[in-house]
Image (cartoon, rainbow, N blue to C red; front, top):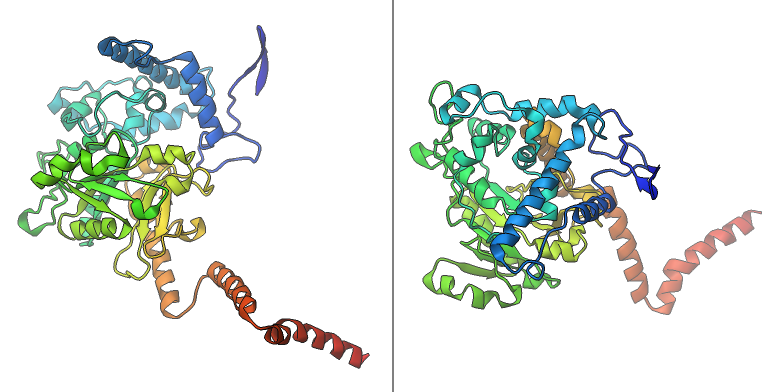
Length: 454
């Protein structure tokens, strides 16, 4: 709302609801999910904590130090959200509850030398990272580093006393293994966190993760191909996806997370790695999909760096988002994409769901809770079986769809669309006499019948 302030009117953020919700609680309320507010916050923070470019500060070391300082100030500013006197103060209790859930077990903290008494509110920047949700500071001042070059060991990331990958993710993998399910994991991100995710994930798969290494009382979890198990470790099963307006030009560099400066010159950029056999450059949706599926039948995981610049060029509309290809004819494979930034509004959504054969977008109503899931961060943190339950829901919907397809029953939405399209196309191709016979005379005939009756 607007309030009087010295020098004029000023915008003041007010909390209008009492519970956390993924859905807008009112039509006239602005939420943090709305693009307009993201822009407002970003513009405000850029103005309050401006960063320096090469022209402002030629000295790279000084520039990085200044920008890092500004980023820290932004994190501290955002951290005030749940403190007394701020808009989110009423949510401090659920906030602290989530932080507590993300705390490492005491025996683990003792092993790595981390104090058990960590003030929860003072660590909110780490929570944003732990929940795999981009920090506002990361949005405004991205880290200046080479893509894919972050090789920080996962134990260093745990020094803040919290999980990096949320516990419910590990619970999902263990539950699927116990149920002897055939599945694969694909990490997708627009951010710079992929190497850190891979570091912790591989440690988990190898039974070396400090929370799952079998050292009492920690349970043992291994997904490294030993003792007849499937290998989920990520080594060369990774790549960078490049998107273009022409879908057929879509490309992916496999075997690297090193991003090309100019995606119009991919072959030149990766020529050395291609000659050495370390990198493969794929072109077109079909080749990319086949490579992904073939890889996942062997090593059951993949890490993909998505094309953020393309999504930004589409003003963050779904048509430029993370590409998810669906082969309707493949009844044995069920793709499920989890992301907390998916929206029913195609003008601002992070996943682009498309039919592999036609390249056409699959409507949100058909894809939601079947191929895509809007992740509720609060529930994903607090409920260990959150992902397990959501997968069950998606499998139920996909099963119903397959059953209907086998019976020749299309969805009501598809029936209406096809009927309208086919009927008009047929009428346009008819001769004059045939058109009169099919479209005009039936109507006239009914009118004549009424006249005759009267």
